[in-house]
Length: 275
Image 1: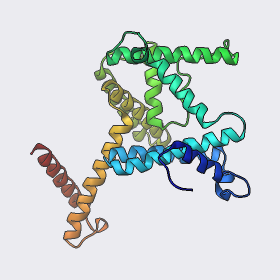
Image 2: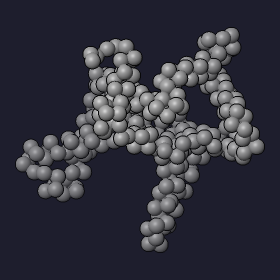
Image 3: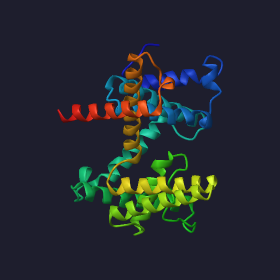
């Protein structure tokens, strides 16, 4: 079997891998639960390639992510649930339906108007899906539909967005900043009381409040934290290089020495960005 730019070849490859007797033993023993962690991992690999601006790597990682979709679709086909083509039809139907300003005559060309229209149509779709399942009378809270498996920062953001849609929100990011200070004070109080368990819980509240501030500033908390992680790695590597030039390793240096090198790396970055 030869490589191809045609999606049908990838589907054929997955079918061959999942064919009993002649397929791959590892692929044959997988199920939705065992493959799900790999699906999440590949999505993170895509995000990592984007964060590093590595388009060549992004191409490969998008292929790995596409393989996950084909894998799940193949397992569903074996169960008689749906096929890959049904996945494609479902998403194309959804995209056309959620973009009437592009594919129909609806108004709403501004970004804010489009976002509002998207949410309205999405809510309508969920209501229709509930009716099809026959659970119209089932209680459905304002925060329903946010997957538990999402990264905690992303899930917090989505929960806050849903609460905001029903009016449970601050109007000023400074109010959120005050809440952050309040949560920090509560951590300090727990530390003063030598209550590590309570302090840990308060850290969770602090993180939730920080996500809320990011949301008010229209910043993606996962994205900005990834950026900070990269910045930390870059600056710490600068510390290691500076110490290596002196014949030392980080464990041989004092905290004060490393702090000074950190400040130097930070200053160098600011000077470079200003030039």
